[in-house]
Amino acid sequence: METLFTPFASLGGGMLIGLGAVLLMFGLGRILGATGIMSGLVFAESSSEFSWRAAMVVGMILAPGLIFLMTGAMPELDVPVSPLMIVIGGVIVGFGASLGSGCTSGHGVCGLSRLSVRSIVAVPTFMVTAAITVYLIRHVFGV
Amino acid sequence: MKLIYALFTGLVFGVGISISGMINPAKVFNFFDIAGTWDPSLAFVMGGAVIVTFIGYRLAWRRNAPLFGEQFEFPTNSAIDARLVGGSAIFGIGWGIAGFCPGAAIPALGTGRWEVVLFLAAVTAGFYVRRLFTPTQSTKKAA
Image (cartoon, rainbow over all chains, first blue to last red; front, top):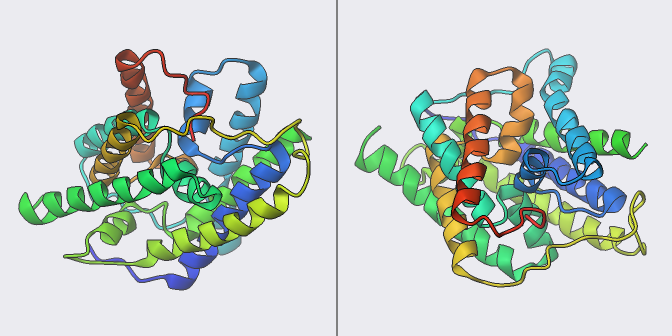
């Protein structure tokens, strides 16, 4: 399934993602990592650790609705894989991101910007394994 | 006030995820499918996000403390170990299977799509599986 090349929307959206990360650092002094935010909610150790993460998640969830109000359409979202693949992929994502202490937002956006050596190792690692996985699924197994 | 600020931060991040295309698994797969229907858009997302975060973090750190906190908090772990590399490699495999990463899936909940609920439930299950394997590691410092 082809998708349109959208350099301007992607650059602009990426800059807003960065702005979100900067605002969180400026306001709360924290790294914006979705894995940390999610696991901090699931395994909350105190109500103060829970509440700011919950508020952030509410803000994130409101975003597509705001896009709908402004443009009249929800953001485009196509899931070209089966529910089984979503479940298998999801469990692997949760396991791996938790073990590796971060995902695309925490290591990718925030870690690289901090010049964290751990993130500089993590990001190429998960980009390469993701590309190999997509190659194997699409071109070797032909799913 | 802190929670309203956190909610706004999440909203900015979520709007960025929505308009950048990160929210769309079809686009994620095509970003990695260099040998097939390649769509390089998501490189612009990462580029835009890192440029803004790199500069913005350094502006934020000119203050002694965040607006609503006592200090800026960073992950203390600096080890390049098997957990980091293995966890990141595993995360990439899951990302390549499902097409969602946590930071894209949380805002995607706002579209009301059931696939997103399924994915995030599976990610949460993956967190629990990881804690069964390595119960001593704290998730608090997750980047």
